[in-house]
Image (tube, rainbow, N blue to C red; front, side):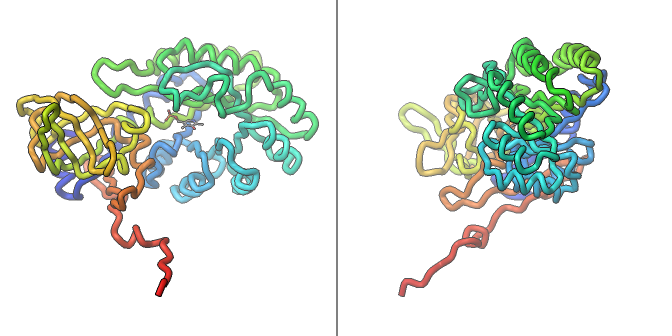
Length: 402
Ligand SMILES: *Cc1c(COP(=O)(O)O)cnc(C)c1O
């Protein structure tokens, strides 16, 4: 998506605006399937929490992807997009037995991440096969808030409790049809990923009724020049060899699953915002945009880096800026960034805005959430309207205090 196109889209649909490039999503999807082309049965389940727009889900449906969901509402959005229940996996954390039962009744594959629910589910539904989420306690990089494999993590059933899983299975007569692990976001090191896989495979061999093994995600994408990203091709080669050997010993061709979110959609998204004010203080030049952490919370929440460029003036003289939002508290998108000269009314573009950006947006400060546009085969499609004042009032019950 070139600068001119982005400026014209911001004009056409209004600012701020999310824009997604279907071509980039498709090429990332194909990168993984090509990397694992030598696995007999491969299944990708797009982790929908990264970006839940139903038109994006429909694109994944078209690619033959399944989806990974973490709430019954995500399951329902997936069904709305046309996914068959058998192409949906439900991987919640700490949700109620009732919600899990409701999802199971829809025919969706259940993935359970604690012994308490496993036992209760097994008592009530010994005939519904479930997957178990195992925590191998491997530290796999990333920000501490998104690193989920460590010993104190709330995610998964500890690898040390596998004997207890086996006891529950035996006592209830339930069936374990899948083993899952998700060691967290931002895997830099393929060796770490393979070490975790080894631990999981070593346990998987003792579960006789498996149909699949799900290695989760955490594939890293580059955020700035020189960033390391997951070498998916190398991972594909090495894990394929290991997985095929496992299947041979196990005596069955299991399905190898992944559930990437960020890897598939992060780079496809751009966030566009207009500059309202350029303000010079004694120490800093601020560029204030018509948005804030209500629309893009990742920099404030995880210190994530989003490359910022001035698409209205890409060849201007470069200067140092702090790009800030309009929320009435600290609201910084980037400090001390070298950006080509910013003038009021210029459009700034934030990269890596396809994952965990719109899906984390809120109405804080009573602002409308922005519109979303998908570029598909050279055409731009509005896939979500900007909110309106009615949306802010929609669920408020205004009582009469007279
Ligand atoms: C969020 C999540 C993912 C996706 O993680 P990414 O880093 O976006 O690829 C995969 N699996 C589970 C269980 C998740 O909760």
